[in-house]
Length: 303
Image (cartoon, rainbow, N blue to C red; front, side, top):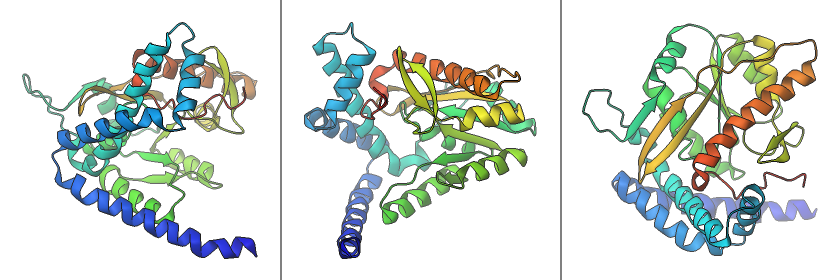
């Protein structure tokens, strides 16, 4: 009975949240990209460090970088909030923010490292797996794929608010292409993508309750095993991709060469080896740009 009584209140909350998103979305959409990005960064780096969730960020940063002073930790944390605010207010501009021009001397908003590998993926007619992390503006990776004609299905976790989820999914599908929401049937959907010769992208840097234990900044974490199981089963190319923020709303997108996949008679050992390698690559990215990773997530839930 109590659950039923709470349903109208929950629906009202969802409606209010949806209205707030729309009211924010329209004026931000009208701003130039650089203005929107700067506004988002200013608001969150000013207010974010005072929010309770920043305690998680500080704890994570101290665990990962025990050698850093409190002042250095606070500097990184402000950068985390700056990046997150920029990411949020860049969202309404996803369709037009990808400004890449390969012409010599042309200074676009985006640089690409590994374009030849990207185009080879597009043209070889084979399935492939691409992993990424919540780094820089991670939403730009599937936008890049769509803009360059690479069919990419992205595995994503929808917001809990169904109104917000529908709104976000509409924007993503418009800018990115195919989406596959996480849930009980996501593994089946992922298998179908690969078996049809498609490309599947997923973020693999957050806690997975039933995942494989691997080291991350010298401490054990759980990493989703789906990526490794698919890579091992289908022996298709496995690439890492990241988008670094170069300053303001300028970015560098990088696609790694294919990662070697160990194949032995021990499935569990192979999955662990693959995810250890993948997580080590993500750690190297985070060490390069610690202020651009999402430290506000409880990555070390097992500790």
